[in-house]
Image (cartoon, rainbow, N blue to C red):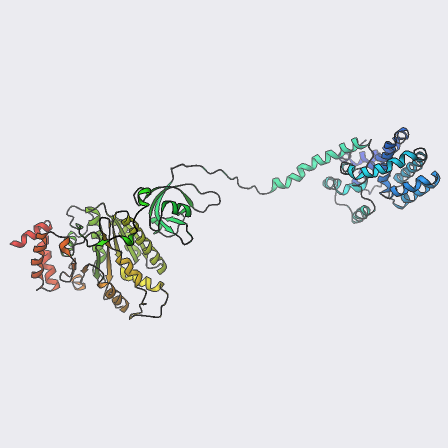
Length: 616
């Protein structure tokens, strides 16, 4: 007995020898597959005829199995013929059974002759065992649908079974079959379905073993495409860093309820360094837009785009539990500034012009919570003066949190300010859209308010408020009411709210805003903006273009500069001496007054010595 795997391994000559031994007719043009199928069919017929004699003495159940064996060649139609043959003569049964055999030829004469012999011999057996067959035929029909699923493995009894398993195996050994053979294969399954035909019970063992081998060899072939498919990246488990990863930034709460911690490195705009804060965390900690958050973050998962906040460490430099019940900024009580910023810094190396800060300190003193305007024409040195004031405050008052906000400025000035000023510099250059100017200024203002709510002193140096008002005018939707110069009637509302946020809080912190305003630029809009802000501040320092053209720095108009309620900032002796000095300078023009003050100040070490020299 040869299995299909053993036959497929043999050469063409060995297959011809085996076919000759089994009396299988082969032609030189026959394919290897046809020879193998012929050998398998011849073996099946030989085994069936050899075991026929043993089935004569078996029980009715065995005769029923023989009946099922014959049904593999005669298809399901033989079951009806068997019922008719029980009532007829044995000779008539043989003739009736020969007819379907001759009608359903498979192209192999030896196999058909063997089947006719089997049918003639079975006719004799039916006479002897007619009574038990009648009883068992019904039980066999009932058991047939239950046994068929287990007998599907015996598919090598007939050539038609090669459509499923054998074609897959032999396709690797031989070329594709001819078109005539394919058409014959497609027509044969219409006559009989070999998957539903039972096979002889005694012959199951060798045939099943033959069918198991190709199935076992098919498994690696089926698995082969999955191995060739692109490998998916191995998803590694996220590493727990514990409390090692921290982030600090300003919180921006979006309208949807969640927020992001914006980084100062990107001017508080959206960036890859943003940290996600969930809506529940915002409610639990009582967070608001502008809060300075220091939190522990965790590594993002595979589906996350941002670092999520894990735990809050500090909020606005304070304990989160203490800040939770803070009073909102709008409900804090504003008062006049009572504590003065000292701008005189004789020992500081960061101040470029110490004389300018001394004059600033005498004629326009700045207090905590001051709302001041530096009114300047172009090229009067307002940026240099603003830089010296920032370094002087940082040197003398390290407890103050200072922010330099540059709106619509030149990029080189932004770089110079970041390198030479000891403060946080937030900038939006002129090549960026007006929406970014507005967004940055709003976030800086909210940050300052949150710090003031926690009791901190904050200073914002804005350059310039005129360009900020221009940006708000660009973003503001048209209301239909336009002022002179093309300014919308509602465009200056938000810049006024920004500038008006400066205040000194009673028994609390303070917010000081020192902004520059441009005049004489040739634009009617700038004049309108300056007129709107002129009466809102409580401190004003004016620069004169005539002095700067003569290279007299600082080019301050002393008679036009001053501070409201300066008596709250200066001592009684200092205020009395300053009144005497102002009376003397009132009779001079701008250039004479500035030259006189510069001469006296440069001859003294500090302002105390300068005021004392006035007696002489």
